Image (tube, rainbow, N blue to C red):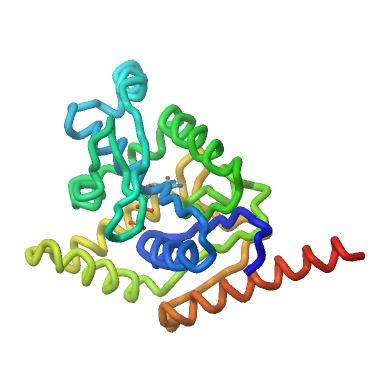
Length: 235
Ligand code: CDP
């Protein structure tokens, strides 16, 4: 793969495998992968731990000014993990308590301004893959490659169930379905940069695709882009 580094934005509905694809692609391309959802989840964890009332603007602003987010590399998995005020919270942020609240927190303007400013800085050096809800529309509107992922809702529920059941055997399908539906609804209808497909994003419905197939699909898109750039440069 070429040394010409680009920005890849992956957006889409809850639990359709954005992070799985982004991680595998980042490994192949030697790119940095940033899970923007982890940032909103870590902020939500802070709000829960500190009893921040989302309707209280002053309390929200004070909380944001106390939050420092960073990523650290896990040497075993070679993946970056989110830290909240220097504490690695990767193990807590997928908890249902956080999932139930995160879309409400992520809809707050001040929260988005705070997170998006950091995300934009991370993209300055290019060679980055970021997944989320507003990456192609708002964080990196100029990204060279934008993917919008979707999958059949039943498939998404089953995927998330398998993931969470391994950690918590008491989790139920209905609870997961309800959470995904609610988050998709809040994320798509909020005022601040709602989830929507950017006009120039390529749609990827992976309901019937394996991990390898979806990876090959996107690798091919990257390859085409890089080859196009080379031929433009040669002319
Ligand atoms: O569960 P899943 O991996 O699909 O979601 P996530 O990527 O961890 O994101 C959790 C929540 O954060 C979403 O439901 C959105 O409310 C919010 N989010 C956002 O508003 N903007 C982003 N760029 C990423 C996530």
